[in-house]
Image 1: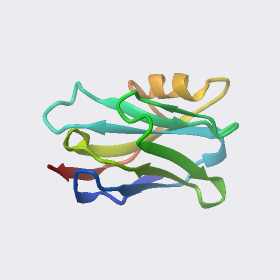
Image 2: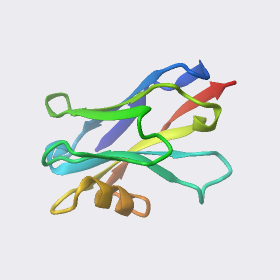
Image 3: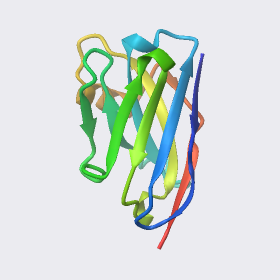
Image 4: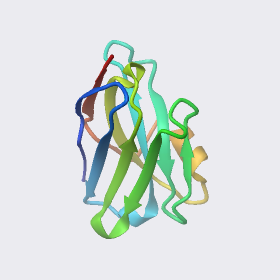
Length: 131
């Protein structure tokens, strides 16, 4: 089982990045996928920023990224994307994806649960935004 993130990097404020989360080894179509970010040294401040449902593709976003970030999924490719536009220095963090068997949960509920536990989680990719 693997979740592998890619696409992180260094970008100036106002720029864009697209992160990818490639899944393998489990039933991707049955799992909600969420993106989280965490600042090194602030492990208690894990922020769920976006989640996409496995049932209907509905989404949920944190207020801090709403209107700037877009989450999408390609079930045929077992991949979830996070398009990040108008990046700000405060978006600097390690971004990682996580998966949870969705059942009857909606995207917001799934993301809330995944703050504390998930079925699978990737290792993360660093995003650094300079002023």
